[in-house]
Image (cartoon, rainbow, N blue to C red; front, side):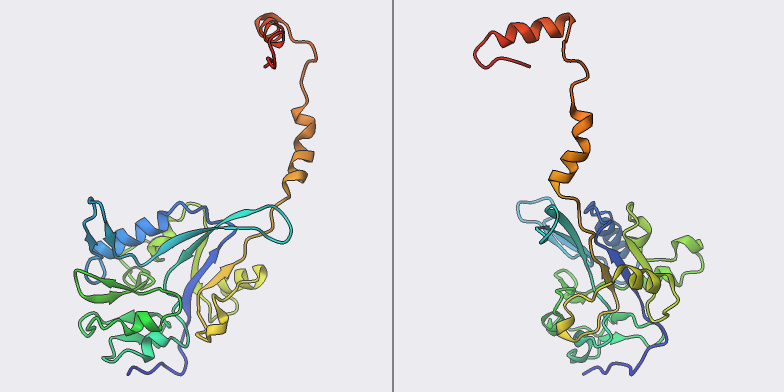
Length: 254
């Protein structure tokens, strides 16, 4: 079995703003593209244009309709990928040592040449963040685009995970969550960043920012009411004639 480091030099991870995410799936597409064309083996698809397509993805977005105790109902878009946990059960359960957590930055990776595809890591992960690549027969997971973030051949603004770079809403943030003065740490502290399923005791590095409460629909109507009043009580011209003509019919008006 693989052992976890006692501590890591940094805790690189994501802060995801559930209030800002619009569910456009741009992060899913960019993740699939970058990790298929670059790091490791391609993320394969099976029967992609057939009646029962399936494929390997390292990042997915789920959508849920939520009714808060106060305020209007909300549609919450929930991106999900590996959370690079401090106490990662996917690492300690691996029988070959293929899964490991890096000391220098805390990123959890899979050495694909050592992976035997037993699936124990997927079974141990409480977040469903690992996937079996059917074509390669090995487990795949989010790498935080480790081949991008340290690549000095890329412009500095591109040295972030592909999902972060491509998010049009700015809902994804990347940095060192082990540094309390980093941008992501301050953002998480200001907005009440949350662990996903903290009861599991995995100590995920990634944080989620909760959605802000929305106004009640009644309040929205009250605000808009003055703007909805008719501009003129008496209409003229063709529309006025048509309205009067239709009003003579049973239930007719415009």
